Length: 283
Image 1 (tube, helix red, strand yellow):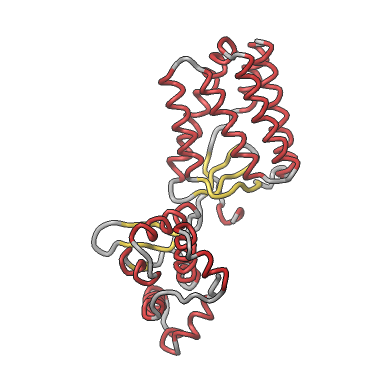
Image 2 (cartoon, one colour):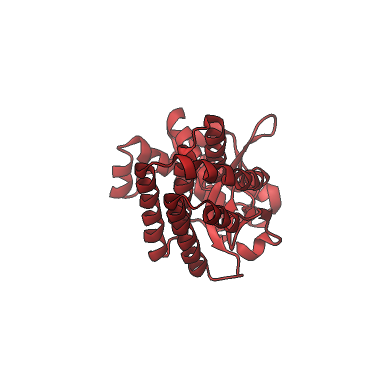
Protein backbone atom coordinates (compact mmCIF):
# COMPACT_ATOMS: atom_id res chain seq x y z
CA UNK A 1 0.00 0.00 0.00
CA UNK A 2 1.55 3.31 -1.08
CA UNK A 3 1.68 6.40 1.05
CA UNK A 4 2.55 9.60 -0.77
CA UNK A 5 5.01 12.06 0.75
CA UNK A 6 2.31 14.74 0.74
CA UNK A 7 -0.11 12.46 2.55
CA UNK A 8 2.51 11.60 5.14
CA UNK A 9 3.19 15.31 5.73
CA UNK A 10 -0.49 16.00 6.32
CA UNK A 11 -0.80 13.21 8.86
CA UNK A 12 2.33 14.37 10.64
CA UNK A 13 1.02 17.86 11.19
CA UNK A 14 2.27 21.32 10.19
CA UNK A 15 5.66 20.77 11.77
CA UNK A 16 6.38 17.78 9.51
CA UNK A 17 5.11 19.63 6.46
CA UNK A 18 7.62 22.41 7.12
CA UNK A 19 10.46 20.03 7.88
CA UNK A 20 12.79 19.13 5.04
CA UNK A 21 15.43 16.50 4.27
CA UNK A 22 16.48 14.29 7.15
CA UNK A 23 14.44 16.17 9.78
CA UNK A 24 11.23 15.58 7.83
CA UNK A 25 12.08 11.93 7.31
CA UNK A 26 12.82 11.48 11.03
CA UNK A 27 9.49 13.05 12.01
CA UNK A 28 7.54 10.81 9.61
CA UNK A 29 9.43 7.77 10.90
CA UNK A 30 8.67 8.74 14.50
CA UNK A 31 4.99 9.10 13.68
CA UNK A 32 4.81 5.64 12.10
CA UNK A 33 6.73 4.10 14.99
CA UNK A 34 4.32 5.73 17.43
CA UNK A 35 1.36 4.19 15.63
CA UNK A 36 2.42 0.77 16.87
CA UNK A 37 1.99 -2.59 15.12
CA UNK A 38 -0.16 -2.62 11.97
CA UNK A 39 -3.84 -3.35 12.47
CA UNK A 40 -5.63 -6.13 10.60
CA UNK A 41 -7.72 -4.11 8.18
CA UNK A 42 -9.22 -6.70 5.86
CA UNK A 43 -10.11 -10.35 5.64
CA UNK A 44 -7.20 -10.78 3.23
CA UNK A 45 -4.74 -9.44 5.80
CA UNK A 46 -6.24 -11.75 8.42
CA UNK A 47 -5.72 -14.68 6.06
CA UNK A 48 -2.14 -13.66 5.25
CA UNK A 49 -1.28 -13.49 8.94
CA UNK A 50 -2.02 -17.19 9.30
CA UNK A 51 1.24 -18.13 7.51
CA UNK A 52 4.86 -17.07 8.16
CA UNK A 53 5.28 -15.93 4.55
CA UNK A 54 2.06 -13.92 4.79
CA UNK A 55 3.21 -12.21 7.98
CA UNK A 56 6.55 -11.40 6.37
CA UNK A 57 4.78 -9.94 3.33
CA UNK A 58 2.60 -7.71 5.53
CA UNK A 59 5.65 -6.58 7.49
CA UNK A 60 7.40 -5.74 4.21
CA UNK A 61 4.32 -3.78 3.17
CA UNK A 62 4.40 -1.79 6.41
CA UNK A 63 8.05 -0.85 5.87
CA UNK A 64 7.26 0.00 2.24
CA UNK A 65 4.70 2.55 3.50
CA UNK A 66 7.50 4.19 5.44
CA UNK A 67 9.86 4.08 2.44
CA UNK A 68 7.24 5.73 0.22
CA UNK A 69 6.95 8.58 2.73
CA UNK A 70 10.63 9.57 2.77
CA UNK A 71 13.28 10.62 0.23
CA UNK A 72 15.79 8.07 -1.12
CA UNK A 73 18.71 7.23 1.19
CA UNK A 74 16.71 8.23 4.30
CA UNK A 75 17.34 6.38 7.54
CA UNK A 76 14.26 4.33 8.44
CA UNK A 77 15.39 3.11 11.84
CA UNK A 78 17.16 0.16 13.41
CA UNK A 79 16.08 -3.39 12.68
CA UNK A 80 14.64 -3.66 16.18
CA UNK A 81 12.67 -0.42 15.84
CA UNK A 82 11.18 -1.54 12.56
CA UNK A 83 10.51 -5.04 13.85
CA UNK A 84 8.58 -3.49 16.76
CA UNK A 85 6.70 -1.26 14.32
CA UNK A 86 5.64 -4.33 12.34
CA UNK A 87 4.75 -6.34 15.44
CA UNK A 88 6.44 -9.54 14.24
CA UNK A 89 9.09 -11.98 15.45
CA UNK A 90 12.77 -11.66 14.65
CA UNK A 91 12.58 -14.50 12.13
CA UNK A 92 9.56 -13.04 10.39
CA UNK A 93 11.15 -9.60 10.18
CA UNK A 94 14.36 -11.08 8.75
CA UNK A 95 12.26 -12.68 6.01
CA UNK A 96 10.50 -9.33 5.41
CA UNK A 97 13.90 -7.66 5.19
CA UNK A 98 15.00 -10.24 2.63
CA UNK A 99 11.92 -9.42 0.54
CA UNK A 100 12.64 -5.70 0.75
CA UNK A 101 16.29 -6.17 -0.24
CA UNK A 102 15.33 -8.44 -3.15
CA UNK A 103 12.98 -5.72 -4.39
CA UNK A 104 15.74 -3.13 -4.09
CA UNK A 105 13.79 -1.03 -1.57
CA UNK A 106 16.19 -0.95 1.39
CA UNK A 107 19.88 -1.04 2.20
CA UNK A 108 21.40 -2.06 5.53
CA UNK A 109 24.34 -0.16 7.00
CA UNK A 110 26.23 -1.42 10.07
CA UNK A 111 27.80 0.53 12.91
CA UNK A 112 26.83 3.69 14.80
CA UNK A 113 24.21 5.62 12.88
CA UNK A 114 23.51 2.56 10.79
CA UNK A 115 20.30 0.63 10.36
CA UNK A 116 17.87 0.36 7.48
CA UNK A 117 17.82 3.05 4.79
CA UNK A 118 15.51 3.62 1.85
CA UNK A 119 17.39 2.59 -1.28
CA UNK A 120 18.74 5.09 -3.74
CA UNK A 121 17.67 4.95 -7.39
CA UNK A 122 18.57 1.58 -8.93
CA UNK A 123 21.84 1.58 -10.87
CA UNK A 124 21.84 0.10 -14.35
CA UNK A 125 24.08 -2.29 -16.25
CA UNK A 126 23.82 -2.70 -20.01
CA UNK A 127 23.35 -6.22 -21.32
CA UNK A 128 23.12 -6.22 -25.10
CA UNK A 129 20.08 -4.19 -26.17
CA UNK A 130 18.50 -4.53 -22.74
CA UNK A 131 19.37 -3.06 -19.37
CA UNK A 132 19.38 -4.78 -15.99
CA UNK A 133 18.00 -2.60 -13.19
CA UNK A 134 20.01 -3.59 -10.13
CA UNK A 135 20.28 -3.12 -6.42
CA UNK A 136 23.37 -1.43 -4.99
CA UNK A 137 25.88 -3.98 -6.34
CA UNK A 138 26.15 -2.58 -9.88
CA UNK A 139 29.94 -2.78 -10.08
CA UNK A 140 29.98 -6.40 -8.91
CA UNK A 141 27.33 -7.34 -11.49
CA UNK A 142 29.14 -5.55 -14.32
CA UNK A 143 32.32 -7.43 -13.46
CA UNK A 144 30.43 -10.72 -13.22
CA UNK A 145 28.91 -10.22 -16.70
CA UNK A 146 32.34 -9.52 -18.20
CA UNK A 147 33.88 -12.63 -16.60
CA UNK A 148 30.87 -14.72 -17.58
CA UNK A 149 31.30 -13.67 -21.21
CA UNK A 150 34.98 -14.65 -21.10
CA UNK A 151 34.18 -18.13 -19.77
CA UNK A 152 31.36 -19.00 -22.17
CA UNK A 153 33.54 -20.07 -25.14
CA UNK A 154 35.29 -22.58 -22.86
CA UNK A 155 31.95 -24.03 -21.75
CA UNK A 156 30.71 -24.22 -25.33
CA UNK A 157 33.87 -26.13 -26.29
CA UNK A 158 33.19 -28.61 -23.48
CA UNK A 159 29.52 -28.95 -24.43
CA UNK A 160 30.48 -29.68 -28.06
CA UNK A 161 32.29 -32.84 -27.05
CA UNK A 162 30.51 -33.93 -23.88
CA UNK A 163 26.79 -33.17 -24.41
CA UNK A 164 24.69 -36.34 -24.37
CA UNK A 165 21.30 -36.69 -26.12
CA UNK A 166 19.71 -36.20 -22.68
CA UNK A 167 21.71 -32.98 -22.21
CA UNK A 168 20.56 -31.65 -25.60
CA UNK A 169 16.95 -32.50 -24.72
CA UNK A 170 17.33 -30.54 -21.48
CA UNK A 171 18.74 -27.55 -23.35
CA UNK A 172 15.79 -27.63 -25.73
CA UNK A 173 13.40 -27.51 -22.77
CA UNK A 174 15.05 -24.28 -21.67
CA UNK A 175 14.82 -22.95 -25.23
CA UNK A 176 11.09 -23.74 -25.15
CA UNK A 177 10.72 -21.82 -21.87
CA UNK A 178 12.50 -18.84 -23.44
CA UNK A 179 10.14 -19.01 -26.41
CA UNK A 180 7.09 -19.02 -24.16
CA UNK A 181 8.39 -15.97 -22.29
CA UNK A 182 9.11 -14.19 -25.59
CA UNK A 183 5.60 -14.94 -26.86
CA UNK A 184 4.16 -13.60 -23.59
CA UNK A 185 6.27 -10.40 -23.89
CA UNK A 186 7.71 -11.16 -20.44
CA UNK A 187 11.35 -9.96 -20.49
CA UNK A 188 12.04 -10.87 -16.86
CA UNK A 189 10.93 -14.49 -17.33
CA UNK A 190 12.87 -14.60 -20.61
CA UNK A 191 16.11 -13.50 -18.96
CA UNK A 192 15.69 -15.99 -16.11
CA UNK A 193 15.00 -18.81 -18.59
CA UNK A 194 18.06 -17.68 -20.53
CA UNK A 195 20.21 -17.91 -17.41
CA UNK A 196 18.84 -21.39 -16.69
CA UNK A 197 19.86 -22.44 -20.21
CA UNK A 198 23.40 -21.21 -19.66
CA UNK A 199 23.55 -22.92 -16.27
CA UNK A 200 22.54 -26.17 -17.99
CA UNK A 201 25.30 -25.71 -20.59
CA UNK A 202 27.79 -25.14 -17.77
CA UNK A 203 26.62 -28.31 -16.01
CA UNK A 204 27.68 -30.37 -19.06
CA UNK A 205 31.34 -29.47 -18.59
CA UNK A 206 33.50 -32.12 -16.91
CA UNK A 207 35.59 -29.26 -15.48
CA UNK A 208 34.01 -28.85 -12.03
CA UNK A 209 35.96 -25.67 -11.25
CA UNK A 210 34.92 -23.96 -14.49
CA UNK A 211 31.30 -25.03 -14.14
CA UNK A 212 31.10 -23.94 -10.49
CA UNK A 213 32.72 -20.56 -11.15
CA UNK A 214 30.36 -19.84 -14.03
CA UNK A 215 27.27 -20.91 -12.05
CA UNK A 216 28.28 -18.70 -9.12
CA UNK A 217 28.63 -15.75 -11.49
CA UNK A 218 25.13 -16.39 -12.83
CA UNK A 219 23.79 -16.57 -9.28
CA UNK A 220 25.42 -13.22 -8.46
CA UNK A 221 23.95 -11.54 -11.54
CA UNK A 222 20.49 -13.02 -10.96
CA UNK A 223 20.48 -12.26 -7.25
CA UNK A 224 21.04 -8.52 -7.78
CA UNK A 225 18.76 -8.01 -10.79
CA UNK A 226 15.47 -6.25 -10.08
CA UNK A 227 14.04 -5.87 -13.59
CA UNK A 228 14.88 -5.86 -17.30
CA UNK A 229 14.36 -2.70 -19.35
CA UNK A 230 14.87 -1.69 -22.99
CA UNK A 231 17.76 0.61 -23.87
CA UNK A 232 15.88 2.52 -26.54
CA UNK A 233 18.26 1.26 -29.24
CA UNK A 234 15.79 -1.43 -30.33
CA UNK A 235 12.30 -2.51 -29.22
CA UNK A 236 12.76 -4.97 -26.36
CA UNK A 237 10.33 -7.47 -27.88
CA UNK A 238 12.29 -7.54 -31.13
CA UNK A 239 15.56 -7.94 -29.25
CA UNK A 240 14.19 -10.84 -27.19
CA UNK A 241 12.94 -12.62 -30.32
CA UNK A 242 16.40 -12.35 -31.88
CA UNK A 243 18.08 -13.61 -28.71
CA UNK A 244 15.70 -16.57 -28.59
CA UNK A 245 16.59 -17.44 -32.17
CA UNK A 246 20.31 -17.13 -31.46
CA UNK A 247 20.15 -19.46 -28.44
CA UNK A 248 18.03 -21.96 -30.37
CA UNK A 249 20.62 -22.00 -33.16
CA UNK A 250 23.40 -22.44 -30.59
CA UNK A 251 21.75 -25.55 -29.14
CA UNK A 252 21.27 -26.97 -32.63
CA UNK A 253 24.96 -26.35 -33.40
CA UNK A 254 25.91 -28.19 -30.20
CA UNK A 255 23.71 -31.08 -31.23
CA UNK A 256 25.44 -31.26 -34.66
CA UNK A 257 28.92 -30.89 -33.06
CA UNK A 258 29.39 -27.91 -35.37
CA UNK A 259 32.28 -26.21 -33.61
CA UNK A 260 32.73 -23.29 -36.00
CA UNK A 261 29.04 -22.36 -35.90
CA UNK A 262 28.76 -22.78 -32.13
CA UNK A 263 31.77 -20.55 -31.46
CA UNK A 264 30.53 -17.98 -33.98
CA UNK A 265 27.16 -17.86 -32.23
CA UNK A 266 28.61 -17.56 -28.73
CA UNK A 267 30.85 -14.73 -29.97
CA UNK A 268 27.77 -13.00 -31.38
CA UNK A 269 25.92 -13.71 -28.14
CA UNK A 270 28.47 -12.18 -25.81
CA UNK A 271 28.38 -8.50 -24.98
CA UNK A 272 30.64 -6.30 -22.94
CA UNK A 273 28.82 -5.07 -19.86
CA UNK A 274 29.01 -1.36 -19.16
CA UNK A 275 27.28 1.03 -16.84
CA UNK A 276 24.43 2.85 -18.52
CA UNK A 277 25.40 6.47 -19.07
CA UNK A 278 22.15 7.90 -17.76
CA UNK A 279 20.29 5.73 -15.28
CA UNK A 280 17.49 8.28 -15.03
CA UNK A 281 16.66 7.76 -18.70
CA UNK A 282 15.75 4.15 -17.92
CA UNK A 283 14.09 4.70 -14.54
